[in-house]
Image (tube, rainbow, N blue to C red; front, side, top):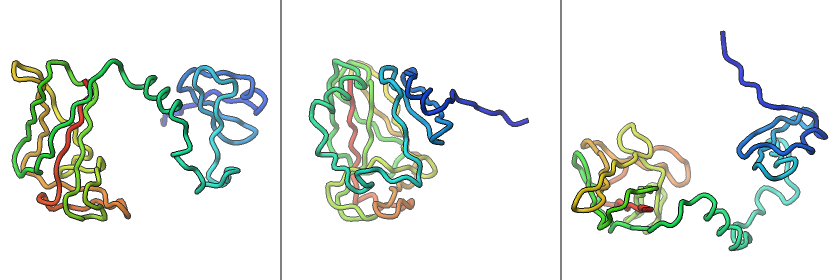
Length: 190
């Protein structure tokens, strides 16, 4: 027998008078939509259905109009502090079993962001574009391993002599890359 997940539900009026837990979702049985809750806002945040157009239009949002204070609040809430941001040099994409980069740091990594940086236009990208939607062979967004020894924080990306690919900038299709056209960049939050 199939399992069924049923979430909390109620009329629009009931949803308007409900403060859900942070991350909780509820279903509005009148509006036929869901609401996302943050643990503080009465009524939560109703999500528009695909057939509904927002009052401002779907193409009118300008991310630069978001105040700096908003970004600082979000950053403070979701980023562990205090932290140090470390960045590797640009590393040629290797044709080897593994790639290890050692940071001069004795603190465990909280977050590691691995990117490919375009050096020669390919797959719709321009020089300097940073791409996080990539993979190695059949692995999507491969995460590196880390460990600390007397040398520092080691970040090791397992490659296994397999080909790299990126999601094409315009189509999103998996596109094999030419290793010489790209570099690897590690950003580590310690």
